[in-house]
Image (cartoon, rainbow, N blue to C red):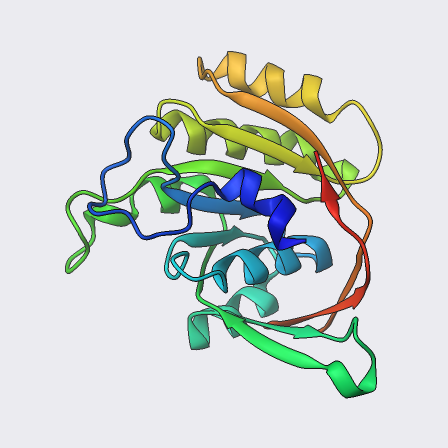
Amino acid sequence: HEHILSSIIGKTDPPAKWAVGPGEVGQVVVIGGGAIGSLMAGRIAAVPGMEKRVWMLTSWVEHAQAIAEVNGLVVHDERGGEFQRRSMFGQVKVVSDAEAILHWGSGAGRPEEMAQANVVIVAVKQSGMRWAADQAARILGGAHGGIAVTLLNGLGHIPTLQSAMRYHDVTGTMVHGVFTGGAVVHQPGAVTHTGHGAATL
């Protein structure tokens, strides 16, 4: 599904500077550390040019610790059957809330001018949508706008996201997405892509 996700990611060449201009992708944040969120974060981070530009926001402590230990997420692709299995590694930074992303550039030894996170993918369970929408609005507020894509079951996510964006006075593009593939997290720090499918917007 990389060719479809490329419409979200935009150009995959690393930016000349950390600063983000109009129409450019800075950093990508995936909200949700379950199977689908992990798959999206890992696969996007494995795209050439997206190294060190992908974040995962999750409250799953064991999963976050495993990712932080190696500064990334392992993706096992089993869609091709026993003889076409392959694995990839995506450099993913993991945090538990939006504030950590917004203040990341202020730490010692980090670039003074960090690329802003202006693409957010929401992949949480229905019960976590209000919290995720608030986090997405805070993140996009730091970039003065951007794009937010929802990838979760059910309907009605966009109005929840719109409400959070209005509350935080943020403008941006909101897109409802559907993912028809399969994924499972067998152990913290790794996700397996198990079923054929696509992410459609």
